[in-house]
Length: 111
Picture (cartoon, rainbow, N blue to C red):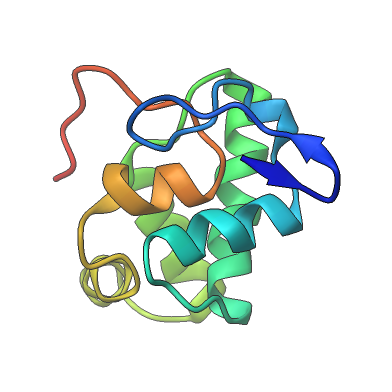
C-alpha cells in the first residue's frame, strides 16, 4: 500500500506489518478498506489504543478500550461496549485493531 509516496507493508489480512508506520493518513486508508468513515470519536479510541500499544507492546484488550471509552464519552461500560461494536461492526480485532495500526492479535478473545 502506498500512502504519500511511502510504501506501507500490510499482511494478507490488511494489518500493518510495522505498527510504527501508522499515522493519520494510514488510518484513513485502512478505514476506507473497511468501509468506515472516521469522525472525532474514532480518533479518541485510536489515541487510547496507540498509547496502550506504545506502553505495553501489545494491542489493548477490548475491555481496556471500552473502559477508556466509558471515561472519554462519559457513558457506562455496557454502553461503551455497544458503541464500540457499532463503530466497528465487524469486530474489535477485524476493524478497530486493524485501523488503529496494530499487528493482528493472535489467540484473541473479542468479548
